[in-house]
Amino acid sequence: MKFGGTSVADGSRLKNVASLIKRFYERKNEVIIVVSALSGVTDQLEEIARKASEEGRIADVNAFMERLRERHYEVAQEAIAGAEIKSVVEELDARLNDLENALISICHLRELTGRSHDYISSFGERLSASILSGALKSMKLRSMALIGGDAGIVTDSNFENARPLFDMTNSKVQERLLPLLKKETIPVITGFVAADTKGIITTLGRGGSDYTASIIGAAVEADEIWIWTDVDGIMTADPRIVPEARTLSAISYLEAMELSYFGAKVLHPKTIEPAIQKGIPVRVRNTFNPEHPGTLIIKAHEEIKDIVKAVTLIQNVALINISGSGMAGTPGVAGRVFSALARVGANVMMISQGSSEANISLVIDEPQLDLSLHALKREFAENIVKDISYDENICAIAVVGAGMAGTPGVAGRVFSALGRVGANVMMISQGSSEANISLVVSRADACKAIRALHDEFKLGAER
Ligand code: ADP
Ligand code: ASP
Ligand code: MG
Image 1 (cartoon, protein in one colour):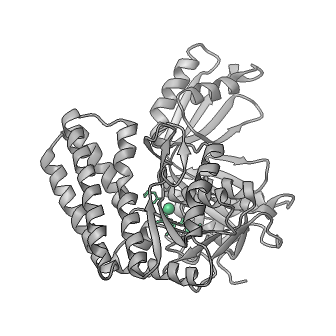
Image 2 (cartoon, helix red, strand yellow; image 1 turned 180 degrees about the vertical axis):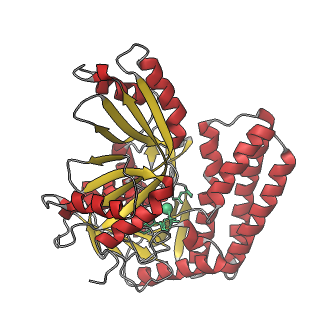
Image 3 (cartoon, helix red, strand yellow; image 1 turned 90 degrees about the vertical axis):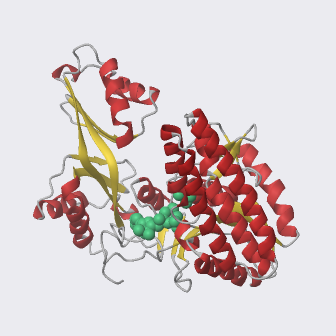
């Protein structure tokens, strides 16, 4: 079971989480817990680390530490009853002390490497895991807090976005966690945080606690992997954009992957992969409404009656257009485009090429725009490519549903619906799985486009 940041945002919520764990544990389940930082803490840690490296003011670090200490003390005091509080406060103090020293060093060094970024941002989860484990102990359960690396997750040293080394991880996680389960001890593991082969702290990328849960769930071959969050499950659209969005009772692994890759923040995009490997069902549930069954994600979802299941939106992306009549019939242009982008580590989210071959369009993460343009201009210094233009003022939208495969007319309905609300489509692409039609619109058109698609496929209707 993984609990996200909003589920442990304050003392009473954290206590509620501890009671939920107790409830399922007492129904004769073995449970392993993965927990996120208290909501907002990872953002704050990233912010203070950046500030320390840029401005170097120790007074800012002191003020930040004061606020962080207060908040965690308060949460601990509310969530933990009895004598247990003393050892938890000692643990928090030791952690906070390490963090403060690291931030002060950054003030002196005025430099923030990926490695120190990961060390600093790991503290959110390290603090919350100590508190949650303490709360379980104060409810008379056996528990132990563990950093991801100590729980056996071993990654490469690609800081800020580290990849697990699965062979090593799978055996180490079993070795570390199974004996705890035997001793009826509930492990509480920091989400998002792992360690490389030398034991240096790494992180799995923002939102990575979901991924931690599925890495661990797959390693111990859990019966199910549960992601507890602040909504009833995976919904037909982001409820912040479409208030009528409805919770889906079941979807397939493929659909969940498409949704999370295309912006449904409710699951980290890599969460599903380890679950697929071992065929483990993933369930998304709401800590604020635990009676709701949530969304079940499984290999094949039988009823394909819903052609389109959900629509998603990705912000913070940019469009690049590469054009030139010399590109037509010249082999290798696309290959050079992708190699140039791969060399600078740019992640290409969508691609499309017109049949005239005179134009290639790509969607990439916006923070990688400058880097990507630079790489492309250097690659195509000669005249095959006439023009490389870009547009930052865009969003990508995906229409997802495994039932679209082999069902004619879905694309037609997508474009008619967008036409009716005057949303101009700037690029289209459909993966060969046919479970996803993705398109690009301007930022100004994004919300109305999402709502129009949600209406067109009647996704909000009860069924
Ligand atoms: P956690 O802190 O539990 O990891 P997140 O904030 O990362 O939670 O993800 C949950 C949020 O994802 C929801 O509150 C919701 O606003 C957003 N979201 C975006 N798209 C969807 C979707 N299709 N279904 C459900 N939630 C979505
Ligand atoms: N705390 C981390 C983040 O905010 C990981 C997570 O919550 O999934 O990105
Ligand atoms: Mg999340």
